[in-house]
Image (cartoon, rainbow, N blue to C red; front, side):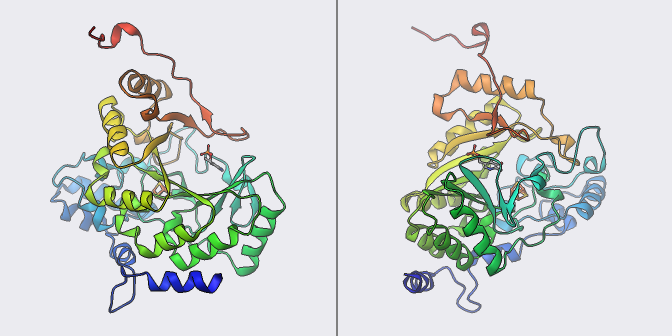
Amino acid sequence: MIQRTTASVEARSPARDPDHSVPAWQSLLATSITSPAELLQRLGLNDLALAQQARAGHLAFPVRVPEPWLSRIRPKDPDDPLLRQVLPLAAEGESHAGYVRDPLQESDATAAPGLIRKYRSRALLMVTGQCAINCRYCFRRHFPYADHRLSPAQRKHVIDTLKASPEINEVILSGGDPLAANDRLLAGWAQALATVPSLTRLRIHSRLPIVIPQRVDEALLAWIQECPLDVVMVVHVNHPREIDDNVREAMKRLRDAGVTLLNQSVILRGVNDNADVLEQLSEALFDAGVLPYYLHAFDPVAGAHHFDVSDDEARGLVRKLQARLAGYLVPRLVREVPERPGKTLLDVGMENPGTVEPVKR
Ligand SMILES: *Cc1c(COP(=O)(O)O)cnc(C)c1O
Ligand code: SF4
């Protein structure tokens, strides 16, 4: 079984560069823009103040922007919503009361090295600390892990811990971005997890198929299709312009491989704090075969104050979506609150009928 799987993964990897035998997505990852000056120059932005800010922020949390993401940014627009997610600003250096480095207190929930468990039926498995893109608003920006790769003994310990916890039926590959790990490692995890009798689902939380849609290559699809567990992928899109033809194609390939696709977004000032944008996002996701799942209320992460949208404002936006969209296109507005048994749903209430366009009869 193990040999057959390994062989088929090797045989079905046409996305490899013939000269270097590196998958195309890994080359795109390796050639990401990591210099703030280059990022601005490529976008035709020559503002000196912007360049100084970007350099200062970059020192605390480096810039990382792969080319396929860059290609979706509108040139010469410093306020572009895709640029805003990746461009360091001086505001990152400000400190604000209540903005902390680990708002979710994940450092307390480690069940085994690499395994984070807060909820009864599912656990997070951190397979790599790497990401394909450095999102300025991310709470993981303060996590010092360069690499989360586990030793064989630690991997066995994770599997033994799961076997001893039969109430866990779903493991969520997380990170960093789990799909930044190579397919050999991921296929190994998928096989090992499939030996845990209580597991029925493997979930993957990844932004990579959006950031670098070339990540969805034959080698990835091969181990997903071989995996006897049901595979759910939760991608991460914040703005409708992140979804281009390549992303739609990647989503289609995943769906054809039997993957259930969901999306999570974070509400972000200057990116998607607008009912029209959120409505277009839901429609664009559905068009790409992805259902909206969560809209995360903003967490007070140190350095990300400039993205803050208040809970009241977020509630108002979701109320508008409820009045405009099919119920299944309205994401759940949630927050993770330490010590709670699951995500906390923010009660958004109902839009005041007087503010909604009347239905013509
Ligand atoms: C969000 C999260 C999950 C998954 O929760 P769902 O509500 O099932 O999406 C699991 N574990 C941790 C630690 C989480 O933060
Ligand atoms: S890809 Fe996800 S984990 Fe990585 S920086 Fe962006 S939001 Fe954070």
